[in-house]
Length: 147
Image (cartoon, rainbow, N blue to C red; front, top):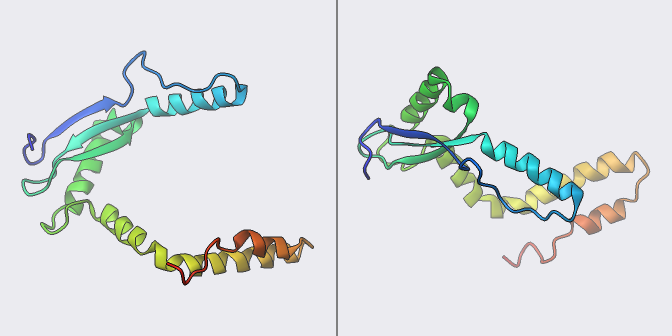
């Protein structure tokens, strides 16, 4: 609520210098993976941007390559501003569309499961694999009608 139209705060690093996340050190592979995750998280910056007066401020997580480059950041903020120009939408249009798709995913899941199963059977039956195991693995725990 404090930002005016077109104002930006940031970039801000997600982790402060010296701050770390705890990973289990007993397993060497988990420690290595943890360090890789930490190095990637350190590259993420966040900004707060309010594209217009009738739109709330957005928290946007971006890679350091965009955050540190003023021309790239300008292009990004301009694209977000253009996507937020309808007063009825309270989020950028791609986020709005992703939200709409996720809300309808439950009804599409049986069709996606059938299509995936058919593709796996077609691919693996030619290789001589046991397709019965594929059907068993892809079978829903509950029936599709029991939503």
